[in-house]
Image (cartoon, rainbow over all chains, first blue to last red; front, side, top):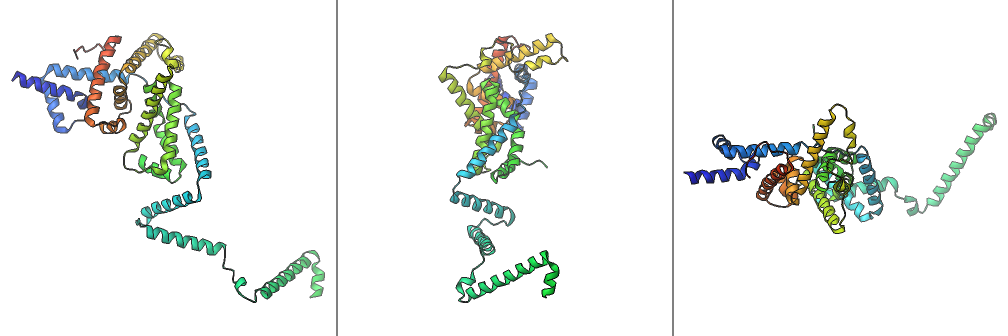
Length: 175
Length: 199
């Protein structure tokens, strides 16, 4: 009986720190609590742990200085700027694809590469068509004539505008 | 609604600086405090905490929310602090706080300006804090790390096991031994003798 009790005490004492930090399962917690009520020696050891912890918490924590956040953010911004300049086109494209995939995963709930590349192709085609409209003039044999006629029209418009602004009465007479 | 650290980190990965700022705000005090307890130099602790955050920022693009952000952050901080201690030993250099006499606080002298306390009570409190810090410093490195993480950072045993790269059982025994040693050291220093048990 005594041997059994010693073994139980040993087991409880090994678990006391974990018990104090609430890191033991509930069933074990009940057993330890019951044992601590019955065994004065183990109860005393539990008190020692509690007291040590209290003493440790007696030390006032230090805080970061007021300039800490600003200096971290400043350094992070510098790093971000250098990372951007050093990034190659392939890296940037990779990042773009990755972020697009993330966006698609969040919004469209599809994580398929085919969808991603399809979407990228569509977006780039749209951008390309908008910025660099297809030059049909080059393909058409009558482009020179057309361009000339457009130039003449522009000249007429400009002269008309100038006359209107400088001498509106004369322009009216001409008409 | 409180946004989790992992969500903030994902935002940071997309290039959102405000998410990173929020993370720094959340952990700046805790991290400086943690590193300060390990290396015992306030200014160097601030430098290392800054370095930790910058490392997090640099590797944000590679971040995957598999493990908890907190344990990742503390792992980086722990490794940097361990390196610092190793370098200090190699160079055979000492920090200013190690060389100052007991009871003298070089960085927190503004604490003395506070007139709400009686000077003798304040002195006693300060001296006690110094003794506790000194006792903590005497613990073996791994025990000190585990005890600091559980007491001051209030991390779970699982998180500590991730940070220290060991099993939960090892963390349990580390903390248990650390508390036992701490009690012995505190009794030796003349404090914490309220309950005397042969450990």
